[in-house]
Image (spheres, protein in one colour):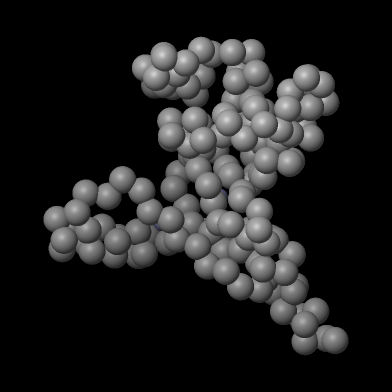
Length: 147
Ligand SMILES: [Zn+2]
Ligand SMILES: [Zn+2]
Ligand SMILES: [Zn+2]
């Protein structure tokens, strides 16, 4: 199996793009984060390593990683777009707290299976799906009750 670096290199090559040191740094950074992250968090982390790296470069690079199926956008919450790497990870769905931004990951075979059945019914070949539930986590619910 290819490494994420091979995947990205091949993708760039096919699209006539170069594997620049900046792109390499961003790729490594993305795979060193094991939680959901947004662009600011990634930039803060990487900027410490390379002061020349700009947010704009990150903005331009993340869509390439999405395109290449290495990362995905999770839910948009509180106006922020969160990403996570998916290469080498099992598919899962998200529950997002609107108040504190907490993200719970879950995988439910019955839901996955149902979706396959729906696709079959419409002779539809699925490539991806995203299930997200927005709401309030237990802690925030308790806080809301308490006040
Ligand atoms: Zn799912
Ligand atoms: Zn919460
Ligand atoms: Zn996730």
